[in-house]
Image (cartoon, rainbow, N blue to C red; front, top):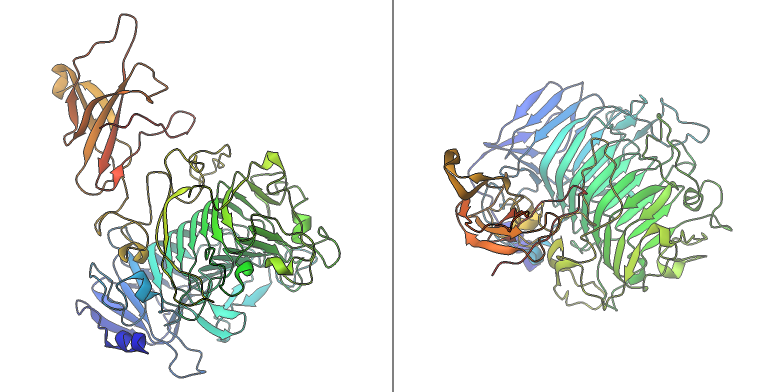
Length: 617
């Protein structure tokens, strides 16, 4: 009750006018950053309208108008309409509750001021829902049906406004979302019928979704019902259920997706990924076969007494779901690394996830665009660290291991098949990321919440290299490491609520990146080529705070491991080196930028592997 009283006494900054949104949006309009827009109920953008939201705009949602009214403030983009919301790292767009004052550069006051205090806030309003016209695997056992449509979960039917599907257009476009923070939302209409942080119903691949935070949602962080939408740079923190949930034949692409589990309010995170296939029945088509690269999923930890610890699994494949997950890092879950559901008597029965794990993925331009892989359910080049069941892949009736009851589960050779190149490390092994801190919950049956993390790989550790190369297909980025974060850059710093609360490590409130990117255009000659011993270079294209530089010199073009530090922590973008190589030899130079966050990147070699170099004193 003290927490509720403190919450009620909070007041948001009075630097924006408040505009109540009380009716559906039927014509295109723009919301501007000098206003707060309050969703007083479920608001539908419909009739082909486009809602444009300026960077830095704050949108707030009310709770139910009365118990049982089923009308929490929620934004729904209906089929054929669009949301254009191009936030920036400097001015993210924020969807939050009525009293959150940690916006527009303000420091939050209680309970919006720390991870521990904010942990009690969830389900304060609805969420953000996008609906499209792709194929949906629901009641389509014989073949994909372009006319199939479904009512989105979490909402009462509203004259067809909540429907998705019915178009068969995998290239459907619901708009552009970037640098958006969705906080403290979620709503349970009924059991298994909830509004998530970000819900994607039949959304197509022409929709752009990049740099999204979902903080303290009551249900799942992101859930995709069918569709082909591709998503990148997603942070889900303290979800009340699963981090990434897909169902009804989702076939999109995912890269750089981080799930940090927690215990918001009275809820508790469940699976890192709950991955379902078809619905009504499981074998409905098209099959759910997404491609996922560079995931970081961190579970509820190893406290021995918390309730249903073994149910806290990193991933569960069921209901005929497939999916391919590569170059990923899964850590600190109370249960098993994976559950692959088979049939009631056989682990690879027809139209089960077990069958997907033994069936090749063959490119089909219509429903399986690629890349091809050995199996429709496949995990390669992934690292698993510290699981409550010791990293055992459950088989048979694995109910006691946290898998679904009444099913026979399948081991796809996750750790036993050397060609998959997966790795399990016991809890006694060194933490592969830079930091992970928990605070005591004070209750034996409740997990100790994660309250600080630096998710970047430890330099030189097991996450810094991989043999699995992402496809060069225009969506996936070269990322020669495991997990959602590179060894040097924390893309969640600066703009997310998690970073502003100190939950995800960053250097300062103004830091947009944890460390600088690569310095560029190093050259000899000084200004106008007048000084042959002077090197010059350009600052990194993106930086945070005052920069300093190390200049490294090596006699080898391929190795800077024992390079000479010509200059250390200098503040300008030039340096003199009068040394000369021996006759017939050459010198090679690299510049490493640094700031208060640490030393930045030396770039990557032609093979895509990040360079390493001497540490300068």
